[in-house]
Length: 121
Image: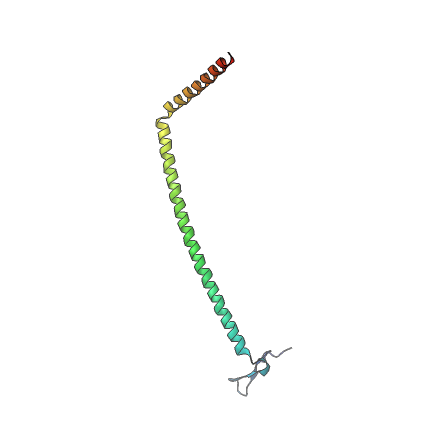
């Protein structure tokens, strides 16, 4: 079992002669930690830029969807208003309209009847 006072890897802590001090020993084999840290720092910076681009794209698309939703609401209100006007005009001219449709159907029937009767002779 490993002693919890000693770490593993390149950085190890040891107890000093007094309890307030900690000694740190860096393994020379793993001395390129600064290069690793710089590499990780540049990658984190790159990821930050990607995250900011994603954030700006999401905001743009959210604004676009909000505008589209407002346009659809306006169009829906216009269609509803036009349907109300159409229904009102049908109700006002409804009885007259039905009479005209029935008369047109009877006229078409008689025209077809007479054409078929006279075309045989």
